[in-house]
Image (cartoon, rainbow, N blue to C red; front, side, top):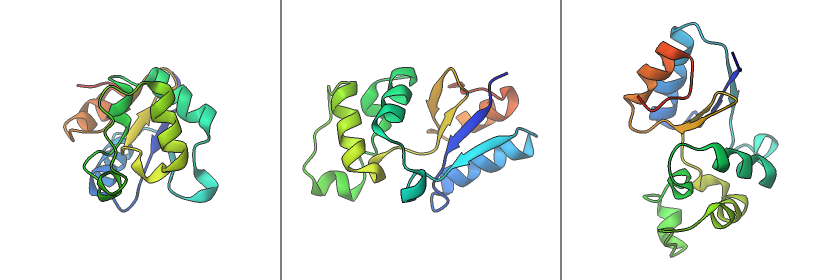
Length: 126
């Protein structure tokens, strides 16, 4: 089975709950604190995630974030190229948590997805 990587923000309660659920279920999880400069995703990594993401590419953006509003963004209908470009420039707009099982990438919202992740050890939506 592929390894699990959690794109994690330790200051986000939803992200913390996801990590705890995976760990309590006994899964080994590589944690990537993507907001730290040393752990940021580069353009190729963001593109790879966006291509494997369950859902639309714009789902990877935190659109309720103050920064999103301050930038005057309207991401409706954006494709992978535009979403990746936004995230390269504004990494804090990356939705969290995100679970990558090596094949599929799923955003951990709503929180009820965490139970499925813990039960299966896979990035599933429910």
